[in-house]
Amino acid sequence: MSDFGFETRAIHAGQEPDPRTGAVVPAIYATSTYKQDGVGGLREGYEYSRSANPTRTALEECLASLELGARGFAFASGLAAEDTLLRALTKPGDHVVIPDDAYGGTYRLFDKVESRWGLEYDPVAIADVDAVRAAVRPGQTRIVWVETPTNPLLGIADIAALAEIAHEAGALLVVDNTFASSYLQQPLAHGADIVVHSTTKYAGGHSDVVGGALITRDETLAEPIAFHQNSMGAVAGPFDSWLVLRGLKTLALRMERHSDNAERVVAFLQSRPEVSQVIYPGLAEHPGHAVAARQMKRFGGMVSFRMAAGEKAALDVVEHTELFILAESLGGVESLIEHPGRMTHASAAGSPLEVPSDLVRISVGIESADDLVGDLEQAFERLGR
Ligand SMILES: *Cc1c(COP(=O)(O)O)cnc(C)c1O
Image (cartoon, rainbow, N blue to C red; front, side):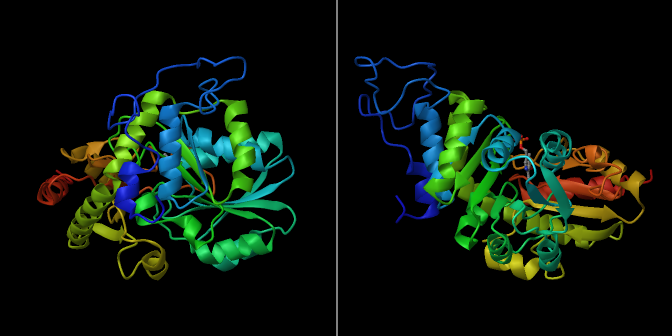
């Protein structure tokens, strides 16, 4: 399928009409085990659904195709994917560089779980190439872990530059591509070794499933991940795999619309005196704009902004929208709004990853842009009343 365009691969990669019935859509194979044609006579390798399941295989092949990787792996959640990656590719005493505004759950995984097994980590401003170079310990650093854009401050990391730094030090570059999505950014093409997704977000796209994925550049990296996926067992179930597979079919259309709507919302926020700063990589004044323009197709649906009047105003805005739903998570068709300091990033309070208290994060959905702007406008009008 590799000669086809992204939209074609999103709909067809890993998915053939069923040979028996002609069903166009892959079946949900709700089965734990498979009949063997004589002992060891497996049909297409299927033996037990922790090891492999046809619905999950379809998703894994589709994900690999979209990220231009060798192999894809689907997990029960983004964090399950991350944990599997870390246990497959690191050992006690190894060192990892992580973003200083990493996703809160990722930070907690390093800080409270992996560190107990002897994995060392340093949070670094990964938009700063020199800071990453200084933090890498040749011989000890096993992974440079990057999110771009980051959450919730939408910092941009230069994937190609960081791949070079990581590789010179004998480390791997892992990119959490959740915020950009496979449509807007393909990190493996810029030198990354492994891509991580919370498919809960844009890949699934409808806020109806929790899932995760890993995509490797080559087969050598795929081997330990395949072994650990089966050995640890945090796999995506068939129904969840099917939901993500369906979500991927419209990913390109959705990301275009998310980006259109975000641009409208950004323009509105910039016009408001209550807002002290609008953070969006599509803005020329964003420090990562040039790098983002080089490695992303467009700038996506995530927008953050700071309220001039401080935390109270930020809390008022998130509580006064009617269309934007006050909720954690992101990447669905519906618009969401949240206060990172008290919600998604509450676990980072008091740590180097603490976020500003006047910050509001929105996941701009694919509703009518006029309605979204109108909703924010009425929330601003109600401030201080
Ligand atoms: C949500 C998220 C995760 C974790 O994924 P889950 O599916 O919630 O386990 C990791 N990274 C980023 C950037 C996320 O937004």
